[in-house]
Image 1: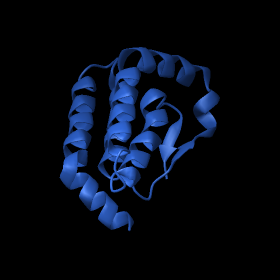
Image 2: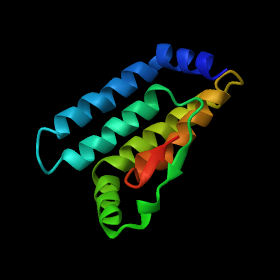
Image 3: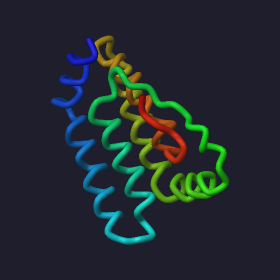
Image 4: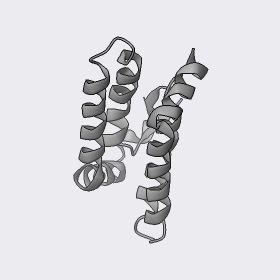
Length: 122
């Protein structure tokens, strides 16, 4: 089921979304200051490419003060827009029965979009 869900996800927009995150992450990595943010954008891109069968877990480093500062900066600059986008897409997909599994994947990606530092994919 995970393979089929990921395949349908990739065909109907997951590939383009994931590539957008990856391209944005690579562009941000061009600056030295942006490397931590670029790494997190690449992580979100990988999560967006194949969300079925993965879960987002909190690391032991989540409470690190540096991660807290970086999460606040991320949430102000990038995270809230990404989270709102996932929320709106989840609401739209949740209208139909066929779209409910895909809506769940969008809702699952919201915490990673808001506060990616100190979280990992499993």
